[in-house]
Image (tube, rainbow, N blue to C red; front, top):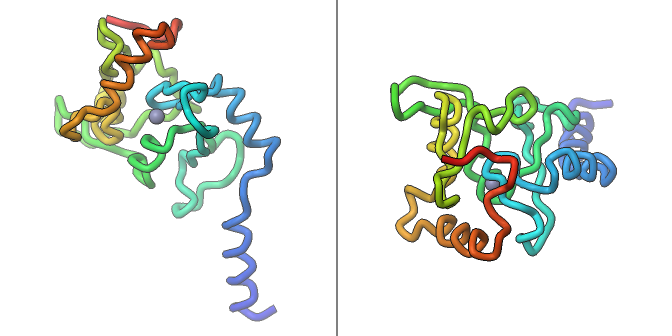
Length: 163
Ligand SMILES: [Zn+2]
């Protein structure tokens, strides 16, 4: 096989979608919500997407240990970042890794359920990098949405810590 044929095959392999059974495992493990902002899939018009913790562009695989369920917002904002800046110290810090860390240890909800607060350097850096509360967006769209979900009793998730 020539180099170009091998390269083409590799590119084709890279574009292969995640097998459905693997995707279902990821969704179930995540309890059908985004593993970063805890957005529930049942409020979405489409199933949530797969996020590669170690990005594919940096050699990350499709192994279950490297996959997380993420909403489109978090997936796009995390892009291929694995670190962020803790706004309290200005230091570079690894982003939250749902395969190695527990959400409730790094984050909690404000008393009104509208915002996620980072409790640790990783929590704060992740809030900032993924803009989990739309602080950088003028409209703060996500906070308005969460307000509606609170009103109909779908938010915040019962087992999440809150102020
Ligand atoms: Zn999310």
